[in-house]
Image 1 (cartoon, each protein chain N blue to C red):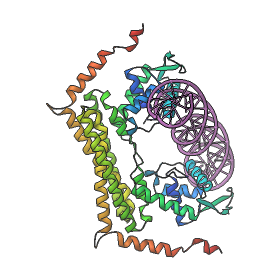
Image 2: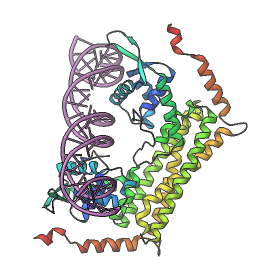
Image 3: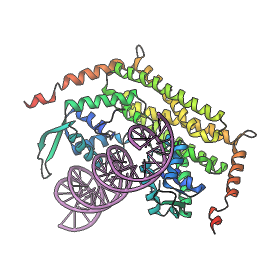
Image 4: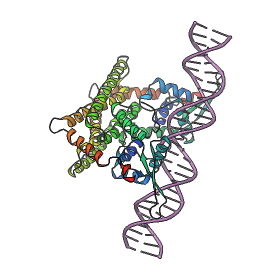
Length: 210
Length: 210
DNA sequence: GGGGTCATGTAATAGGTTACATGATTCT
DNA sequence: AGAATCATGTAACCTATTACATGACCCC
């Protein structure tokens, strides 16, 4: 991964929209909101403004014209530069071709799950399973609505990807619960024993000092 | 999701280690590094120091004693408070039970993939597939080594989860390539046509102003 | 027509990353 | 002993988030 001069992922959809036509900042906010881009990138009005500044400093966009509508302060309309266009294309290509190491919170939680009691862990995993199923159902639903409304499936691939990940997660959770609770061979026994032992070993580490 | 007083995910493994015994900052860095926690959370020495400060300000850890070994500056050993212990447990539980909306970069890229030429997209997807397979092979390998070395599988569930996600991604990629390239019904045709049309429509938006 | 909510923007603060600094340790 | 590298820590800088400010619009 090359070091990007503007690293916030939000810059990518922003440049992408400017590919179409010059816009001013709030225009971008509106477009991002209207297209529900918040599902793929995190943003607030403030971050959009920030990113636009960064893009200008980096030379990826320039002032195109200044509008003076009604009582509003002057609005600067920005246009993509050639360099910006190149950056946008290249960044997008590299995001597709080069898988990045990500840090899903659930992976972190899993790496620490051994600290919980096994039956507690199972309960929580079951709770998660229910929630994931709910989200999945909603997402599937809104996807079908969009398709029915005529949106080409090409513009829903990101959603389809998320659904696929959720499917995988559900499968994984089921397998994990099974691994823990299997009658003879499950991890629950040794796991609980190990926890009990480490708790009795250091019964209040402080006491040694008193 | 409640608002955490210390929100950096790194705080979670840090508190978790302090559950075991009090440590000083560099000790934490060493432990995190030794356990390869960098796979699940992003950290550098500097961020560990920062998080420790934040945790102390929040009252989740306190100074336990001050070591004066050799020529090194005094080293403050921190211990988890009861509140810290509670926060750690509760946070971990909620990370498991409540799926969080994440922002994988690939989802963002997919949401913009329509801006590329279809055959270009396919080439890039194939490239990604190859890379994912490589990473997956490495991970599987190191996992098997760890198992062979006697590490209980419970401590490898996070890795197993990542592998499952990669499997899903590979399946998704294959499906997407298929969707694009299918002989009669593939998206490639309309997609390319649409691109050509939007390019001819605004042949240099600037020209209208000259 | 005054009280609420939305559109639009800025400033203050907190958070994170990079670069660097200093002393130990190891190797030749 | 000097160079290289590792251990340990700090400071400066950049990024992101929160809170707020102002005017427009809408509703009784």
